[in-house]
Image (cartoon, rainbow, N blue to C red; front, side):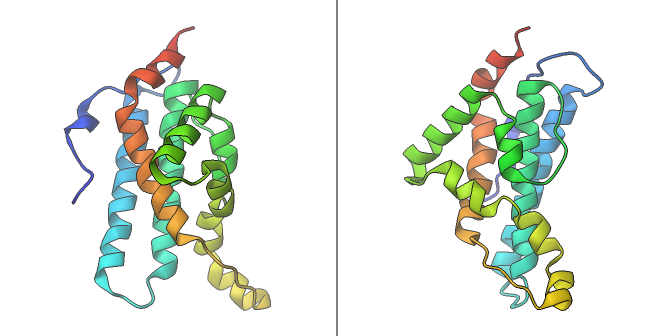
Length: 169
């Protein structure tokens, strides 16, 4: 089942006028979906060496979803790849709604899960250098990354009216 649907044709809200357009927020969401769907193709491919590319794609999908939400709520994107920092940049009410909805749906604490995967994009992307550098390795929480990836995409698509409430100056 693909996540692409007609919901992406809706205009996403923006908080303030700036150089970023409504199209920018929609583009971040479209990219989140594209990276997530690409990771699912790798999962289904059966390639034995696809673990790190899957983690990289899913972690970047989460980053794109968070940046979409940040554009909707704050009117401008945040930079960086640390997922927990991006999440903490959202308005408190949005953070609370995400945490509540995630717990209701999955029975896990969102903040604990996202902290565990916060650096997965960087760590999976540069794992070869780190492995060769010091023989370092680390565990990845791929179940959480997939859960959060699809959750944030659906959250952005289903909460347009809630997100719009932050657009009032």
